[in-house]
Image (cartoon, rainbow, N blue to C red):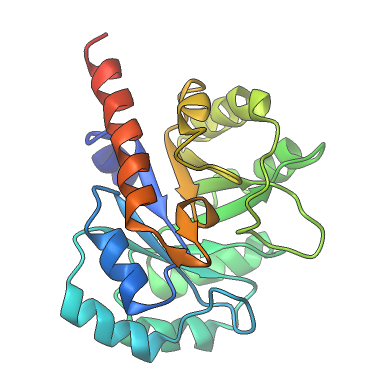
Amino acid sequence: MIYWEAVNMSGTIVKLCGNKSKEDLTHSAQSSATHLGFIFVPGTKRYVDATSLKKWIREIQPNQKIVGVFVEPPLNFIDYVLQHVPLDVIQLHGNETVPYILNVKETFQLPVWKAIHHGEEGLSYMRLFSGVVDGYVVDSKVKGAYGGTGVIFDWEAIPDYKKEAEQQGVSCLMAGGIHPANVRDILAYQPEGIDLSSGIETDGLKDPVKIEALMREVEQYDTSISRC
């Protein structure tokens, strides 16, 4: 899809997710990441209010794409968020159905990414959304959590998810337990993108030192690939 091709021209897609304060956004926006993620799931530890985020974005003016993360949201809630925040992507992390996602796409005319939790049914679940979604985020399956757990899944499964995404003509980000010290290991599988939250935090806050270290590793990887 054109949207993904345009992003991939600049290298690995990097989404820094779970920005919940103006300070978090400041640190993430100063990086060379391609996407910034915000959690619009009330009651979760990284939930951010759209009215507050509107002010922060106006002040900081990040250059990255803005991704809104939701779990089975009513359409009027997505609409409320969009009245305040200029989302580039809607990311769905719950048990959303195909008809629901098609309704979201038709209503808001935005790309939709679907989270897939790794497991025995991961690929078959991914195939369910073939021709429907614009991308995937593969995350670890942790009971009682939708994401942001810092738990790693079996990265040897990455090639299978990549192959399925390629067959569908969309891209796929990998999430779950990625941090500056292990990002080289997951980049060895050549994912099109990575998605991080807890791996760039210290005491629940985005850590500029960790973000810088992460992006340094990614940029070195992108440079080495471009020279091949």
